[in-house]
Image (cartoon, rainbow, N blue to C red):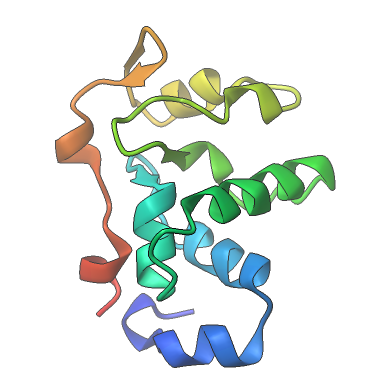
Length: 121
């Protein structure tokens, strides 16, 4: 999928909310992170960051390995979803992408932050 061709209206009319979340998360580049709230805002459901978290928790439960859920953190760069990963930990997965995590928080969060509302115009 070409990120530049994403149509926000397409997401909400064609797929369930969870599927919309998964489509956006699949577009997060390696070595970058975003927040639950940024995804919710992009999907036109600002204030539903917890629902984004639930969607990502669900994808880990059912083994949807093509969704890089480890790249989604809270608005402060904290690894709040870290307990929902099987196999490699969230921190290990981020480390594999050269993202440094200290005390459960992404270092240099602001420069690594990927905002779908700006990147997927």
